Image (cartoon, rainbow, N blue to C red; front, side, top):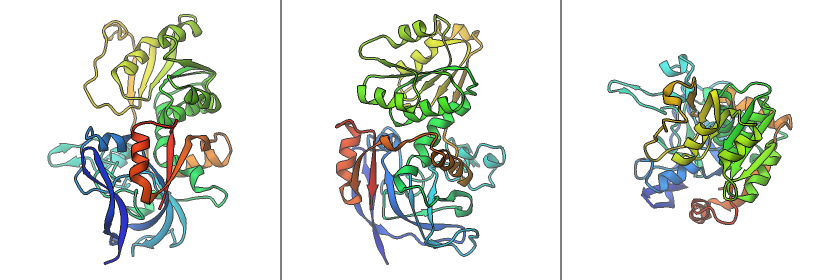
Length: 357
C-alpha cells in the first residue's frame, strides 16, 4: 500500500512527522495532493492538549492543492485541477446545512447535538498537514483556484480569512460603524480587513506587538492601540468621545479581551466572539448592564463549502485586500516539527507559516 508523510498527533505536547497509508477514495470523495498548507492557532490548542482529538490523527485544516483522484460519483471537477477546500467541509444535505448552519454539519446524533460538527479536517478525520488529504463530499467543498492566484494568495481562505470575515459579517457591521478588534493575530487582522470591507468607517486595532499593529494599518485599521503602553478601554472611549463602539470583535480567546470588548460597547452594541476559549468565561455585571443593555453576543465558526471559498478568492482576485504580508515564514513538510515549535512559541515575529510538502 502506498504511503505518505503526515503530521500526526501523538499526545499532548507532541505532534510528529510520520508515515501513513494514502487514503482510499470513496464515491463522493476526492484525493487532494497538498501543495501548500499552514498551521493554525487551533492546531496549537490541540498540541497543548487544550482541545481533544484522537491519538494518531493527522492535523491541519487549511489545504491548497491539486486533485489527484476523484470518486466515481463526483461530477463537475477533474483530476489535475488546482483547488482549495475550506476548513469546514459540509455535506450539503444535513439538517444543519438545510437550516443554513453549514459549519455545524454532522452535529445531529441519537445522543443529541454536537457543536462544530462541520469542522472535520484534523478534528474528526485526518487533516491536511500531509502529502495527501481525502476531501469528503467533494462536489460541495472543492473550489477551483483561478489561474492568476498563487497558493500563498489563497492560503488564508480556508480558515483565517473566512473566520475573520465571518466575525465581521455575523456582527452585522453597517456603513458608518465604529469597530474595535481586540488582538491582531491572523484572525484579528482578517477581522480588521473584513470590518473595513463591510463599511465600517472607523476601525480600531488593539495588540501588544508593534509589527502586528503595523500590518493592522495595512489591513484597514484607522487607529491602532498598543495595549502594552496604553489602556485600550480608555483609548477607545477617548477616540469615540465616550460613545463606545458599535461592534467589538474578540479574536484572542481570553477572559481579559472578552471583558474589554464588553466594556467598550455602546448600549445596544454587538460583541462578536472569534476566539477559541480554553476555560470558562465570566460576564462582568457592570459592562453587561445587568443584562439590560440591549447588547448582542454572537459567535462564529467560519462558513465552509465551495461557494464560500469562491467568494473569498474573488475578494483577493479583485485586489480589495492583500493577505500576503501574513505569511512570514516558510517550511517544508519535513521540517513541520520545527515549524510547530516556532509558531507555538510565537518567535521571530511569526504570523502564519506556509508548509509545502
